[in-house]
Length: 126
Image 1: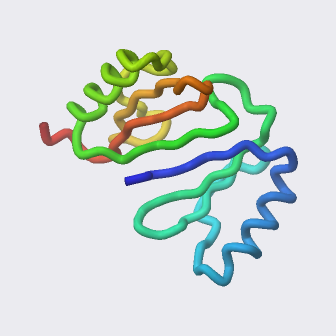
Image 2 (image 1 turned 180 degrees about the horizontal axis):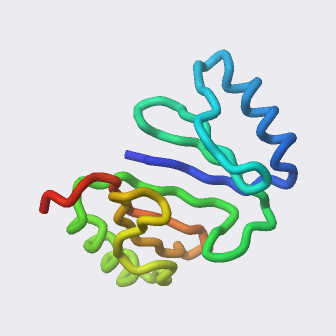
Protein backbone atom coordinates (compact mmCIF):
# COMPACT_ATOMS: atom_id res chain seq x y z
CA UNK A 1 0.00 0.00 0.00
CA UNK A 2 1.20 3.52 -0.66
CA UNK A 3 1.76 5.35 2.62
CA UNK A 4 2.57 8.72 1.08
CA UNK A 5 3.58 10.45 -2.12
CA UNK A 6 5.52 13.71 -2.10
CA UNK A 7 5.89 15.98 -5.10
CA UNK A 8 7.94 19.14 -5.51
CA UNK A 9 6.08 22.36 -6.30
CA UNK A 10 7.41 25.73 -7.43
CA UNK A 11 5.15 27.83 -5.17
CA UNK A 12 4.34 26.06 -1.90
CA UNK A 13 1.68 28.52 -0.69
CA UNK A 14 -0.09 28.66 -4.06
CA UNK A 15 -0.08 24.86 -4.31
CA UNK A 16 -1.34 24.50 -0.71
CA UNK A 17 -4.32 26.73 -1.48
CA UNK A 18 -4.95 24.91 -4.77
CA UNK A 19 -5.01 21.45 -3.15
CA UNK A 20 -7.10 22.62 -0.19
CA UNK A 21 -9.81 23.76 -2.62
CA UNK A 22 -9.44 20.96 -5.17
CA UNK A 23 -9.47 18.20 -2.53
CA UNK A 24 -12.50 19.66 -0.69
CA UNK A 25 -15.15 17.83 -2.75
CA UNK A 26 -13.25 14.58 -2.25
CA UNK A 27 -13.23 14.96 1.52
CA UNK A 28 -9.42 15.20 1.66
CA UNK A 29 -8.10 17.66 4.20
CA UNK A 30 -4.85 19.31 5.22
CA UNK A 31 -3.41 17.10 7.93
CA UNK A 32 -0.10 18.69 9.01
CA UNK A 33 2.98 20.43 7.71
CA UNK A 34 5.52 23.14 8.29
CA UNK A 35 5.19 26.63 6.87
CA UNK A 36 7.64 27.14 4.02
CA UNK A 37 8.76 23.49 4.00
CA UNK A 38 5.93 21.04 3.21
CA UNK A 39 2.20 20.25 3.63
CA UNK A 40 0.55 16.84 3.98
CA UNK A 41 -3.05 16.08 3.00
CA UNK A 42 -4.98 13.11 4.39
CA UNK A 43 -6.33 11.26 1.33
CA UNK A 44 -7.94 8.38 3.21
CA UNK A 45 -6.99 4.85 4.25
CA UNK A 46 -4.01 6.18 6.21
CA UNK A 47 -2.38 7.59 3.06
CA UNK A 48 -0.98 11.08 2.55
CA UNK A 49 -0.36 13.31 -0.46
CA UNK A 50 2.43 15.75 0.32
CA UNK A 51 3.85 18.82 -1.38
CA UNK A 52 7.29 20.28 -0.75
CA UNK A 53 9.12 23.27 -2.17
CA UNK A 54 11.07 22.37 -5.32
CA UNK A 55 14.24 23.90 -3.82
CA UNK A 56 14.43 21.08 -1.23
CA UNK A 57 17.91 19.64 -0.80
CA UNK A 58 18.97 15.96 -1.05
CA UNK A 59 18.10 13.34 0.01
CA UNK A 60 14.72 14.70 -1.18
CA UNK A 61 13.90 14.39 -4.87
CA UNK A 62 11.18 15.92 -7.07
CA UNK A 63 9.07 12.77 -6.58
CA UNK A 64 9.03 10.56 -3.51
CA UNK A 65 6.86 7.46 -3.01
CA UNK A 66 6.73 5.54 0.26
CA UNK A 67 5.34 2.01 0.36
CA UNK A 68 3.96 0.76 3.68
CA UNK A 69 5.12 -2.80 4.37
CA UNK A 70 4.37 -5.43 7.01
CA UNK A 71 7.63 -5.61 8.92
CA UNK A 72 11.25 -4.63 9.22
CA UNK A 73 12.32 -7.76 7.35
CA UNK A 74 10.31 -6.54 4.35
CA UNK A 75 12.05 -3.14 4.49
CA UNK A 76 15.43 -4.87 4.58
CA UNK A 77 14.50 -7.26 1.73
CA UNK A 78 13.20 -4.41 -0.44
CA UNK A 79 16.43 -2.48 0.08
CA UNK A 80 18.62 -5.43 -0.97
CA UNK A 81 16.41 -6.27 -3.97
CA UNK A 82 16.29 -2.64 -5.14
CA UNK A 83 20.07 -2.31 -4.99
CA UNK A 84 20.48 -5.66 -6.78
CA UNK A 85 18.09 -4.37 -9.47
CA UNK A 86 20.30 -1.34 -10.11
CA UNK A 87 18.93 1.18 -7.62
CA UNK A 88 21.20 3.46 -5.63
CA UNK A 89 21.35 3.78 -1.87
CA UNK A 90 19.64 6.89 -0.48
CA UNK A 91 19.33 5.70 3.13
CA UNK A 92 20.06 2.27 4.62
CA UNK A 93 17.32 0.41 6.51
CA UNK A 94 16.97 1.64 10.04
CA UNK A 95 14.96 3.58 12.60
CA UNK A 96 13.97 7.13 11.65
CA UNK A 97 12.90 8.66 15.00
CA UNK A 98 13.12 12.12 13.43
CA UNK A 99 9.98 11.17 11.43
CA UNK A 100 8.07 9.27 14.13
CA UNK A 101 8.89 7.22 17.21
CA UNK A 102 8.38 3.84 15.50
CA UNK A 103 9.31 4.77 11.92
CA UNK A 104 11.62 2.21 10.27
CA UNK A 105 12.54 2.74 6.64
CA UNK A 106 15.01 2.57 3.80
CA UNK A 107 15.41 4.82 0.79
CA UNK A 108 16.64 3.99 -2.71
CA UNK A 109 16.89 6.00 -5.89
CA UNK A 110 15.24 4.32 -8.85
CA UNK A 111 16.84 4.43 -12.36
CA UNK A 112 15.38 7.92 -12.92
CA UNK A 113 16.65 9.24 -9.59
CA UNK A 114 13.32 9.26 -7.76
CA UNK A 115 13.37 8.57 -4.03
CA UNK A 116 11.52 5.33 -3.21
CA UNK A 117 10.92 4.36 0.41
CA UNK A 118 9.82 1.12 2.06
CA UNK A 119 8.61 1.84 5.58
CA UNK A 120 6.48 1.01 8.56
CA UNK A 121 5.51 3.03 11.56
CA UNK A 122 4.66 0.45 14.22
CA UNK A 123 6.30 -0.82 17.40
CA UNK A 124 8.77 -3.67 16.89
CA UNK A 125 6.98 -7.05 16.98
CA UNK A 126 9.44 -9.15 14.96
